[in-house]
Image 1 (cartoon, rainbow, N blue to C red):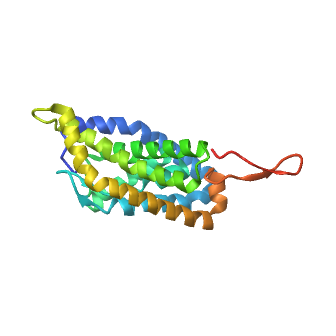
Image 2: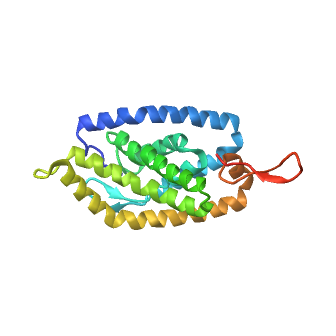
Image 3: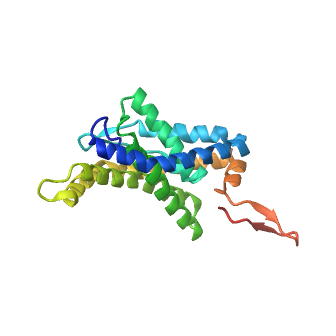
Length: 235
C-alpha cells in the first residue's frame, strides 16, 4: 500500500475498482449532505483530508510493488464516519497517483478499497465498540487509528496474495509471506499513528469542542426537566 501502477493483473484491477465504487458514491452523497447541512464543518473536513494526505505520503519500501506508511484515515472516520472518509481517501490516493507517482491509476480501486474503505470502517468499528463500554475517549481514538492503519495492510496482503499466489503453497502461503513482511514496518507505524492521532484529537478537543460535540465525539450536556444536567449519548 499503495500498490504501484500496473502491478496488478488487469482483471484484479477492474474487480477492485468495481468493489470500491459503491462505497465512494455513497460517500459523495454523505459528504454533500454534511457540507450542505453543516457548512461550518468544511474546515475540519479539509484538515482531516490533509492529515490523511500528509501521513500516507510518507512511505517506506516494503513488499515488492508496494510500500509501508501511515494512513491517517482513522481520524477522519472517527470525526465524520467511514463513508465520508471513503471520499477523502479516494481524493488523497488520486492526487498522490497523479502528483507523486505514489500508487497508480490502474491500482486506484485496490488502494481505495484497502485504505479508504476497509481501514476507516475497521477503525471506526473498534472506536465505537470501546466507547460503548465507556473506554476513555483517547484510548478509543488510539485503537481506532491503530486498527485503521493495520487493517489496511492486512487487506493489501490479501490483494497481493490473490494476484500472486505462491507457486507451491498457493494463496495462503503468499498471504503469510506478504503479511509477515508488512508486519516488520507496519506494526510500529500503526502504533506511532495511533499516538499521533491522540495528540491531534487532544488539540481538537481544546480548539473545536463545539464541533466535536455536534459530531458526537464529545458528550453534550443538556438540562433535564428537573433542572439537573444529564449527558446525551454520543452517536
